[in-house]
Length: 180
Image (cartoon, rainbow, N blue to C red; front, side):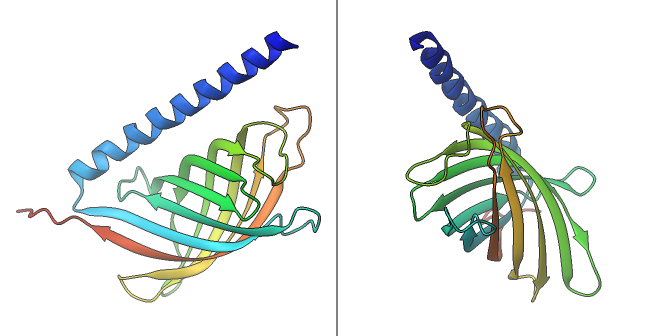
């Protein structure tokens, strides 16, 4: 039993180190190559919206650099609930502009989940899939709604998953550097 606990702790440490390296690899070119540094999103809503037992409020902060590969953008984020659960993740989203100023983008991510006093999702490595629909008022900000699911993909002994419904507001970030 003690050996399994040691292996489990080592795996968590390796996941954290991998996530930090992944974030640095994606963020470094963003600050050097782009005068538009990307989009910062603030969101708040309902964690575990489909089940009443563990339902609580959640908030997240997400960064999407202005670097893409065929409209695929990297994303990095952190989520926290009022029950002290937290989730740090990185992944990607695909942007689709709809009619007018409407936009739609699906996203996929993986990250580290800490239960806190919230719902036990069964494993520290969790995967997040979601969709967002929003409206751009101007180049200054966007508002919208996101729905996403977090699950461990049956890596743990149990896989209850959770769904979140949040409203968001996004702001572009700009560099103060002078470009020719």
